[in-house]
Amino acid sequence: MLTSYRRIFSSQGTIAFTLTGALGRLPVSMFGVSVVIMVATLRGSYALAGSVSAARIVAVAVTTPLIGRLADRHGQTRVAVPAALLSAAASTLMALCARWGAPTWTLFVTYIASSGFPSIGAMARARWAALYRNQPEMLHSANSFEQVLDELCFILGPVLAALLCTMVFPEAGLLAASALLVVGTLLFVSQRQTEPPVDPVRAKGGSPLRVKGIMEITATFLFTGVIFGSVEVVTVAYAESAGHPSAAGVILALLAAGSAVAGLTFGAIELRGSPSGRFLACVAAMAVLMQPVLLARNIWTLAALLFVAGLATAPTMITSMTLVHQLAPAAQITESMSFTITGLLIGSSAGAALGGWVVEVAGVRVGYVIPAAASALALATALIGFGGSAGRVSLRSIGEDLPRTSPWEG
Image (cartoon, rainbow, N blue to C red; front, side):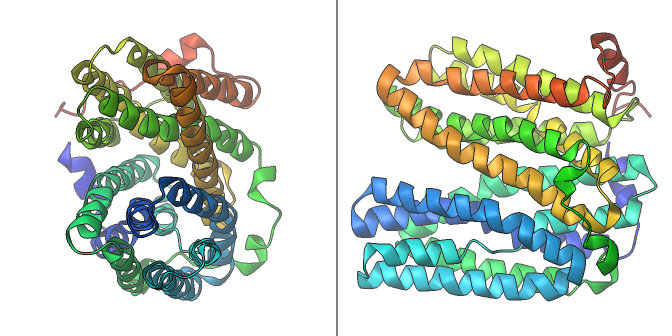
């Protein structure tokens, strides 16, 4: 298995931008938890904390594709550095406003102003695409490794943020995330030898959403985001109702761990068939594996079922990035990936709100109907987008697209 990953790091500079990229994306997973704990502690309102957090998610959904477009047109360094500095400055100002008792509206303004941070994950994937555009197997392994890094960041980031906010002082998590964002971004862009070349003329083309397939992936990811957002909220409520509120973090970590394990394995597998066929197969697996969660009767079975459900998450994300690389114009690759991320963010925000509403109205056990239904809708959307002329994938061809080689062979 390790052979596949050793190969992708054979190119000069890949280890450096991967390590610095991991540092640069860690703060993204810290912001939400940091702000919720900080606002709830200093202002005494979880409702206000949730509203401030949701407002920023909407803003991020707008700014992420814009920053991706600017990076494609002007280069990662020229865009990422000012974006990180402005985002960190706004976050720091928000922490000061919360500490000094500034009016509530200042929390919204400053946190929304911090939404324009660079998507280091998308920029790192753009570097891999530039290096291995004509080597599909290498690009597949690179995308798999990036997805595992994402999972690790979203396991470690919230834990680190919660520890800082509760054990140091309420603003510590947000301030640490801001500092890490600046340091990680500066170190990442300093790796100039792997920065993708810029083609300003081609990068000024129409929106990537007009490219056949990009809109379909983004729409599928809207429902995928609903899965993630609703699972998080419903799981917290489920653990609390079971009398084990602290178990929620462990259960969600198992979901991410299942995804990380699958991502590592998936990246070492020799794949056959078209990326669109694999994308359908992965979304179908995600829909199938999410349904048993409805049968959970205690937190232990829930933890096991969510771990299994997570096994389809990373392969779906990895395959989608491979498909985006295939479909998107080379000069608009960062912007194209940013649109899929935006779909996830919007869906996650909607899923969190919908999951919370269902828990309040119908109870925690019914709450898992939301991710189960969302996974089915994601599959339906993917079939509409890629099951016809774009994919021509039947149930039989989906089976033919599945991996044929075990990662442990050889």
